[in-house]
Image (cartoon, rainbow over all chains, first blue to last red; front, side):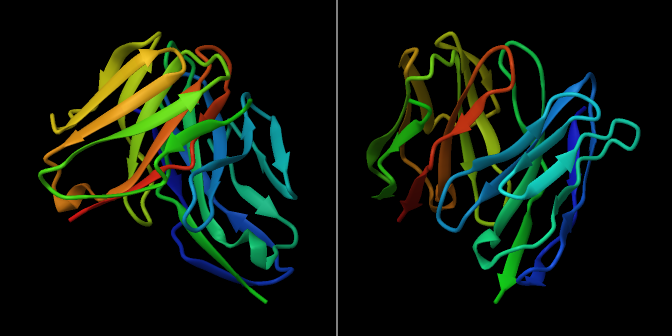
Length: 113
Length: 112
């Protein structure tokens, strides 16, 4: 089956620190990979995605590279801000007629001023 | 229009009430989904509709009844819920090909 393993949280960083949230996956077939962000009291927003090996997704200073050889999609940001405090979910989907998202457990990030 | 709109945003209901959650999208997506999310947990898939037909029911109790009246609308009818059903209910839609997948902002449901 398909699964996503995410770095355990919570993660607490000071403003302008470097962020890495690890994500690895197992999948039957060739998945698309996603990072979603959920701010307090809100729904999920797509942060970035990658659809094939070696693709790099990027948005709002966040980046993640689809590494097929290590089955990983780690999220990075060079300098976090207080406004980045949220829960981050790594997810995958397999192309098909109606695709389900398989989520990791989520990582709570708190950035302190 | 690139949004999935969910109403209401908040709902408090008693265990004997009947209520409905609504979801609407105008992106031409032909797959629509209901997810349930408990605090600090990832969303759990409940139902999938493909071309307005129910294609996946993840063993959800019958007190939750989905309906897809047309390609833009998705409803979730609620009846005789339990306090443990209190959660954030998320609607999503997606293309059947490609990777577009959009979530609504959710309905926060409290069962008292």
